[in-house]
Length: 100
Image 1 (cartoon, rainbow, N blue to C red):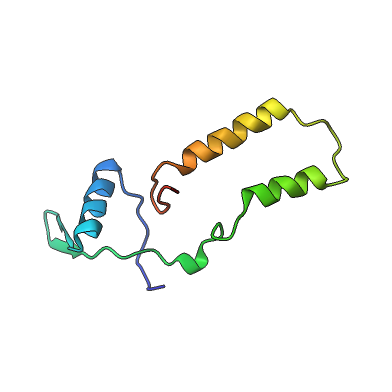
Image 2 (image 1 turned 30 degrees about the vertical axis):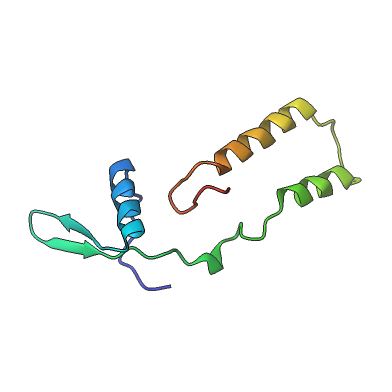
């Protein structure tokens, strides 16, 4: 990973412009009162993606098979939670594209 002077989480408009620049394979021009900058968009380093090999079904299977359960599981709440997680995974977000 290259060195940076900081990290800034883009607002919606900037995120849209960066996405357009990435799709066009062109830099994005940022103009301030003092300078004009050209930002080249690059793909994030996925080698550090802690979720890359995560398998939700395997995790749930392990929880279900665990002999250490101490209190009953609210199956309806668990089903709702899983549905929410799956819905969120279908949405694009900064640093994590939607799963198809």
